[in-house]
Image (cartoon, rainbow, N blue to C red; front, side, top):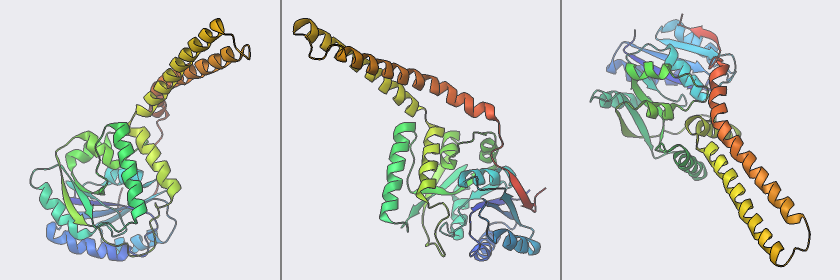
Length: 309
C-alpha cells in the first residue's frame, strides 16, 4: 500500500513523459516518500509504453496500464482508480498543464478535513472560443442535470481512500469524473492554481467531434431531463393539434373550408406524431436505464501492465 497514488491518463504524450516523471518525483518526495505514479495509456499508439517501461525499470514506483484501444479519458481515470492503492489519490492530466508543484497544496488542504479537493484553474491558456464553448457546455449541463459545476474545475484533484472505494462501486459506462465525485457527496474543497502552458503539440482530446460526443454522453449519464423534454414536446404537440382541430371544426361549422379533408388530415398527423413522441420519451426513460444495466460489458480492456499484478 502506498500513501499517495498519482493517476495520470495518457494519450500521445511521449515527448514529455520523462520530464513529467522527474517533476513528480521532485514534488512527491517531500510530501511523503511512499508513493506510486500510475499511468493509464488510452490507446495513443506512440512510444509512451516503451518510455514508461524504461523508466519503471529504474524506479518501481512507476506503474502503467495500457488499454487495448482508445476508451476515453474518463474511463482511463476509472482504470487508474481501480488499480491504485494509495491512502490518498491525486488525479491529473499528463500534459503538464496540471502543474505537479500544486500537489502539496492539494494534500495540505485535504489534511484540513476534506475527502475531496479540486483545483480551480486560473489564467487558463486555451483560446477564448474554447473557453466560451466550455461555459456553454456547463450551462447546458447544469440546466439539464440540476447539478452545479464550475467551468474552471477540471480533473486535477485529490481523493481520500473512502472516496476512491465508493467511486469504484459505480460501474455505469457513461462516465464523467467530476460529476460522479460531486454525486458521491463527500466533504470537498477547491483551491485556485495557475494553469501552465502546454509544452508540446496539442491535446489528443481536442477534436471537436470527440468533445461533442463526450458532452453528449456526460449529459445523458447524469440527466433524465432530455427524455422528459421529449415527452413534454410530444404532449405540447398533441395539445396544440387538439386546439387547432377545434379551431378548424369551428370554421367548418360556421363558414366551410376551401380544401375539404385537409384540416382533419393535418390534425390527425400532428396529434399522432405528438402522442408517439410522448410515449417514446416516457418509455425511453425506462429503456435507457435497463439498456445500460443489462449489457454488463467491462468498462475498458487492459492489454498490458507494468508493476501491477
